[in-house]
Amino acid sequence: MSPEKKPKKSLRSKRFWYSVMPLLLLLAVILFVNLFPPEATGVQTAVSSSPTVTPQADATPTTLTRAPILPAIILPSPTATMTPLPQLPAAAAITPYGPPPNSNLPQNGRAAFYWMYSEPVQAGQQFVLSLRQNGEVFILGTVAEPNIGDNFQLLIDFSAIDILPGTAVWQLHLERQNETPPLLSSQERIINFLPD
Image 1 (cartoon, rainbow, N blue to C red):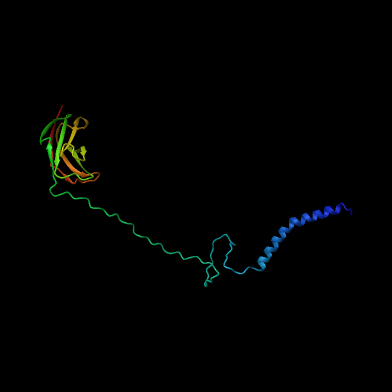
Image 2: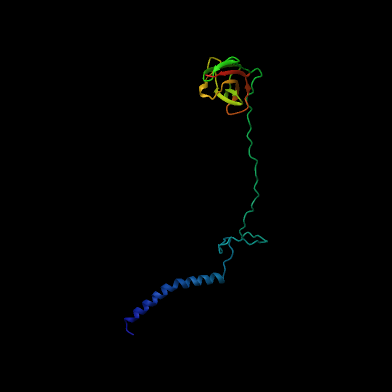
């Protein structure tokens, strides 16, 4: 053999060992671990991807155990306590002034409704003026505070409402906003609508 071929052969041999050596070392480590398993040191290694737990009759301090799952305790939800709304005094009264009973008005006319209330109006309270004709109830307007001295007034244009000629009944109601039934109602008054 020529001296030129020897270095090539040794170079090929080195390349072979460099590429095969990591595989051989890995194989040696795997064999060593399988032949001489490490002692339990409290560190658990994941071998399997499935989360199965084998039951053990005798738990030793070196094995890891899962904490017991406690049953859920359902607490009752807090109940809202309603604050009592202020009561109306026994002497509270709505006194309608006008229009007078059995008034005659044109069907498309205007009218001023005015009244007095014996007590101060509380926050959240309002007066509702209603008109009933042929079983149909019309809400004509609302007022929450005195607007004519200590008294109340609503001006109504009946041309904007589908009122028929004939008799109707109007009444005032003291209500809490967005609540029914009314706290207090006035006496009913009759009004006559005349055709135009």
